[in-house]
Image 1: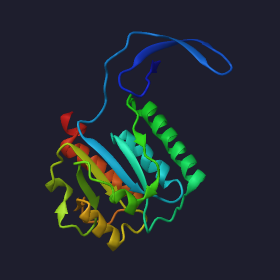
Image 2 (image 1 turned 90 degrees about the vertical axis):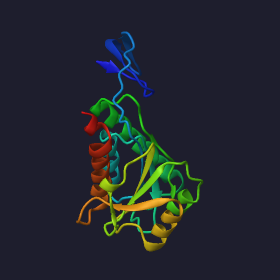
Image 3 (image 1 turned 90 degrees about the horizontal axis):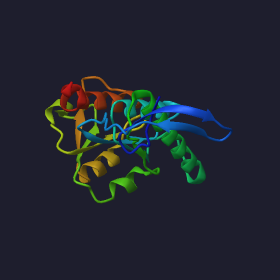
Image 4 (image 1 turned 30 degrees about the vertical axis):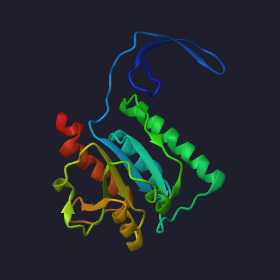
Amino acid sequence: MVLFDGRGGEYPARIERIERDRVVAELGAWCEIERESSLTITLVQALQAGDKMDFTIQKAVELGVRDIVPVESRRSVLRLAGERAGKRVAHWQGVVASACEQCGRNQVPLVAPLEKLENWLARPATGAMRLMLAPDAEQTLASIRPVGEVQLLIGAEGGLDPQEMLAAESAGFQAVRVGPRILRTETAGLAALAALQALWGDFREG
């Protein structure tokens, strides 16, 4: 078996014994193995209803996203606040850890605390290339080469409303499209992540 602590690298290990509240394992030599993409992508995902958020987060981790920022947008069907929001973020962090175990990543992406999209957009920009998906955008994803960190903004069911799109543009986001069809929220972010990796990230590197 292989063990990792989420900070990079991993250890071959052998279980010595299983006790009631812990597992004792013998660790081998630390291995400097990394499976991270050359692209540093933060997924800014508006809340989705039902199990869609779990699915999106799980698959985004498999596709190499570095961090996940859940936000509440005006068209979000799901609404969370207070203790309920904190518990859901903790649950999503567990989804991330499980996805890392499944796909062999040894650096665990962080799920940020939930906040309103307008509040997140009001924060100072970090210098990342900022992209938001819009089906009627003039630019395609393939026409924009990422430089350094990328922040990818995806709306909820029904997409971002016009005021949110204006606020995002004011915060430095460029509207891009990934194709001629309108994608559901649970498809849009994953399609964009896969396209980014295919064009500029680890798929291209082979």
